[in-house]
Image (tube, rainbow, N blue to C red; front, side):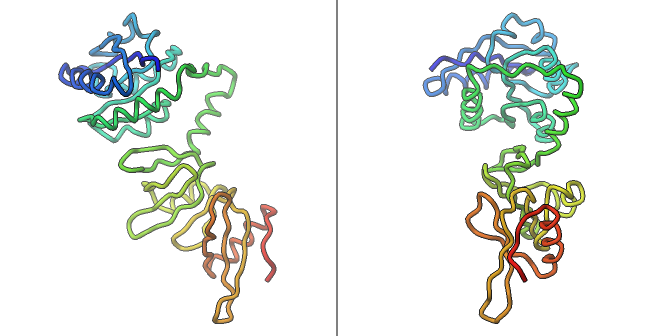
Amino acid sequence: MSALRVLIVDDEALARQRLRTLLERLSPERPTCLVGEAASAGELLVHPALHACDLILLDISLPGTDGLMLARTLRAQAVAAELVFVTAHDAHALAAFELDARDYLLKPVRTERLAEALARVATRLPTALPQRDARPGAAVGSARALSRRLRVQQRGILRLVAFDDILFLRADQKYVQLHSRVGEGEFEGSLSQLERDHPDEFLRIHRKCLVRAAAVAALERTLAPDGQFRWWIRLDGLATPLAVSRRQLASVRDALSRAGQAAQPD
């Protein structure tokens, strides 16, 4: 296993020292080579190792140009290194992931979280970041792709989950739980707002449940012991069907009919 070449960017000497210590602690399991440090955007942009490193551990609160603006500059200059933000604040996580950051670590950085970040970076090597697309409309396409993601908390970590991976969302008291092909997490929004913002992407099947319309495989019914029919949605990638409320049944059937998806007859 080749060592990850790491460059640390933080204006606080103690913060840089802590990252150095953690990297040394993890080195037997995840070999790294510290190729340099910088205390500001200006120092990083002229650092001789900038185009020779695999990973930049980047603070957001930097003097002058902050870490997010610096990351945009690095992307514009086609710097191939992966980015992992290291910050004391969680408010910038969405902006960080929109810049294709591999991870977002909160200070004080824990050993296991840094190990996870290094592992994620290692899976991308030796493949370099893709070339920026200079074709007309490429930026618009990129923005559209970013808008088709939801911000969720997974085991205390902020993630962006692509719509294509989402199966359904269910409200549970004051939380909304997102279920996807890549795991579960808490969605930081409401079902109503999501339904309004993306009416073609999500389908309400219950007062407390939205499913991703493109994941619907079938609408089925069963006969209950009381002689009444119960309706269910089957989703691709989900073994257990989800109940459809009587109140939502008509709109669900109408939506599926428009989409050309089959349902059992009345």
